[in-house]
Image (cartoon, rainbow, N blue to C red; front, side, top):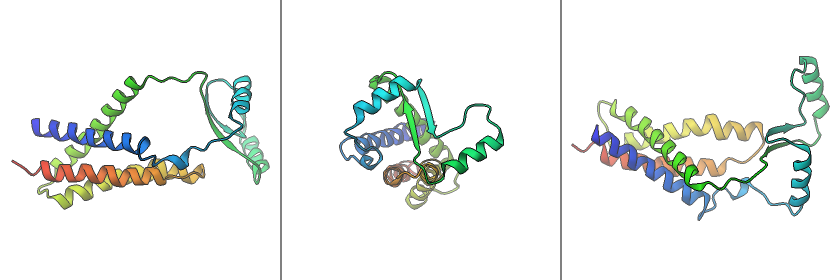
Length: 179
């Protein structure tokens, strides 16, 4: 159990450190967030017109019929649309966010460690490919699907997937087979 705990903690730390580098110093996700010089006017308008929440615009009111949904979709073809996540106040509680992120990373690494411990034989190649498969499945069913439906870029997420899960696979491929 000690071996699994160490494997999970270090694996989680690798994920956490890569995510920090990716989102800060390396700026891998720069293409996902653009700047507009009109931000002050847009924020003022949003503040006057929205409650806190996430929006897909244009949309239909709650309880709309199937016919109303269909008509709205047909009416929207070829016209502008947007997704908005609006918050009334910026929360900079980085300590709690980092704690939650690290906890999620350790849990994700634990899932991979648990899976790898079920293999009858484990070597570096198997650990790396299994880690990439787990990360790849997650990427395909979350970030990539979102990029299809919301016509956005997921290249940063793909880079993250390959690098962070590849590194975790190398760590686990070295650590777990040891006695």
